[in-house]
Amino acid sequence: MKKILAVTACPTGVAHTYMAAESLLKAAKERDIPLKVETRGAVGVENEFTDQEIAEAHAIIVAADTDVLESRFAGKAVVKVPVAQAIKNPAGLLEEALAKQASAPGDYAKQVEQSKAQRSAARSGPYKHLMTGVSHMLPLVVAGGLLIAISFAFGYEAFKQEGTLAAALMQIGGSSAFALMVPILAGFIAFSIAEKPGLAPGLIGGMLASSTGAGFLGGILAGFLAGYTAQALKKYIKLPRNLEGLKPILLIPLIASGVTGLLMIYVIGEPVKGIMDGLTDWLTSLGTANAVLLGLLLGAMMAFDMGGPVNKAAYTFAVGLLASNVYGPMAAVMAAGMTPPLGLWLATLIARNKFTKEEKDAGNAAAVLGISFITEGAIPFAAGDPFRVIPSIMTGSAITGALSMAFGATLRAPHGGIFVLPLVGHLALYALAIAIGTVVTAVMLSILKKPVEQRLDS
Image 1 (cartoon, helix red, strand yellow):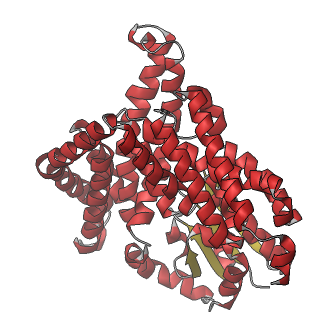
Image 2 (tube, rainbow, N blue to C red):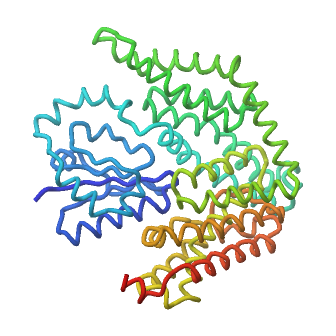
Image 3 (cartoon, rainbow, N blue to C red):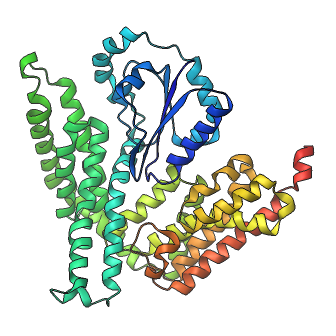
């Protein structure tokens, strides 16, 4: 039988990665298709493919929004889609993979070198590179934010007393973890574009973005600049075969780092610093009306595609502001991300005649995902009834985000859901915002959705 391999990965490595793997495995089992799924999630690589398995595979499904070392699959038949596609249409992806023309064993070895040269052009574009950087940055932000929050638990001024535990925690979280945030973001954007030769110039560009005050926007620009510079150098520098080894370890890092660094210092750094300072000043001085509008927008974005590009744009914006000591948008984004699964769970309780038994069971799981800030828990419902579910969850999340900003809620930790609620500023009002958005979502769904009998008849 034809053997299929699949690799799944999402930017945060929390929900989409494993939901996509589960969907593919379930569909393969129903069709008796031999399938192995490699997951590249927050806990690392699991079920990693061996070279033998890749060589024997008929085709490979790459369901990913971040880099998954696709160079391993050079010469093989590949079906490449966003990770959400594996959740929505696993059977279709398996059929497409089976229908692929398999490469002959000899072709695999012959095409490796040619595919390496074409790899950069075959990538899915800037969004994927950005999300690769974000996914590598997130553990630093999560760990650093939580350590800073724990430091503040001893008192907001306690860290200023040298030698105390609060001071040590602040040094670990703020001076170390947060200091690495922008360099890692830039470094892995560049790594996604140009692989290993792009890493050093990306890290250096990111460090310069931090030191010049250009912040996360400067880090993003530095990452793309370093990556595309390194990629161009890989393509255009030609050396004798016996000197080719100098390119990735000497010439490309040297030239790309110099170009990136000089542009960051003399061209990019100051203008982007001005933009970041202006953005920070505007956010910290927001009046209630403007704060509500910002929260409304961020909330709607979080629910629009439940972990997709729009959701990640809002989330990345809020995470980036943490380094500038702006904590309101992060609170609004997390609250709005919790609301969709919680609202769907509540809807299955108050409008039981409008949901099947399977949907009610999924509602219980959605509740657990919701309190954990995993917006993807709403995906199965949205996939089955998008025209009713998506407007409902967007409305609830928009209201939650607006209320969070209006109440002045703040959050230093970029993830954690209910587990980091004690770290939220204005906790009672924050919980109220989540509750109101959850109820609004549930009520809208109970009004818009048809009873199960009518759905089955139609």
